[in-house]
Image (cartoon, rainbow, N blue to C red; front, side, top):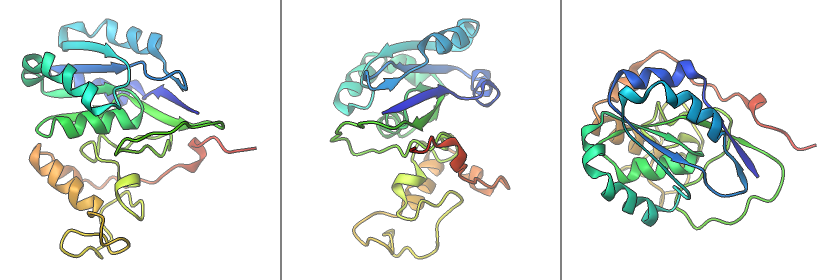
Length: 204
């Protein structure tokens, strides 16, 4: 089981200074999704929203492609893609829109219980504090074998991870993504990201 929570409004309100396209995923029944809270948050921001589309199973890449094609013109007009979903949905949309800034509107937390099975290429560690807005929509916890939050370890060779030579270096992927959207300067900011394990609901 997992639960999605609306991020701190101060963290996401900045994106409404630009033309914003909003994806809202109410998803599978195993996920608690704060739909009423999100709708209330978006209500007074309509003037800055290019379009807002609500769908289920944003994590299904083929399904999301159809929606993206349907809204292609509005997406191209937008400057920011804001995604209200678990971390998997954000990563899927980021991958499908490589030239766009894609940011999460939710944090995803772990809850005890059956997680279900997924055949998707993306994963969410449910850390309760989503970093995808800093890393171009690529999760450092799942794409980096060491789960590093503040850059590469320095052990990668030819773009491959030193832990698993078959795996691409997650932080090289993050850098390329940020450079493609003109946001590589994020990596030069002094802010240090530290994973807060207290946000994870522990098993009893």
